[in-house]
Image 1 (tube, one colour):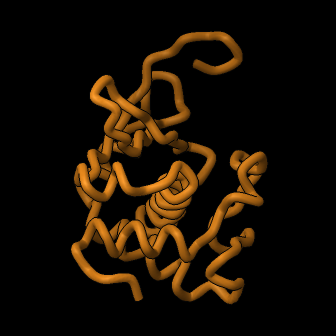
Image 2 (cartoon, helix red, strand yellow):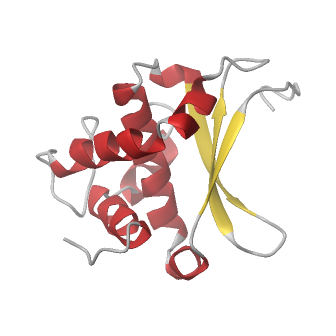
Length: 141
């Protein structure tokens, strides 16, 4: 829904491991979402304004990351994210690991955009790394 107008678009839902998802905070999930979007924009050369996402909690109470095209009718961008998820995650991690801001914070070089301005104070690129490490079955670095 955009400006109270419903439109159909493409979406891609990342279902998380139940143990990881249930132990992660909303802030951690949101950090992971924004890092994933930034990694997709970088790796797949998608304009960041053409994709967005949200943390979605399903009927079972299990959170997932829901990515969608902002273009009405969809442009296929999130479908490409699904097809190239592994390189997108690698690009996302490279973006936050290589950032010069502290792991307990974020900046416009790693996570912050105009669209997520209301969450800037809650975003931490260190939390995103912890989430992706947990999803990959590695201990936090």
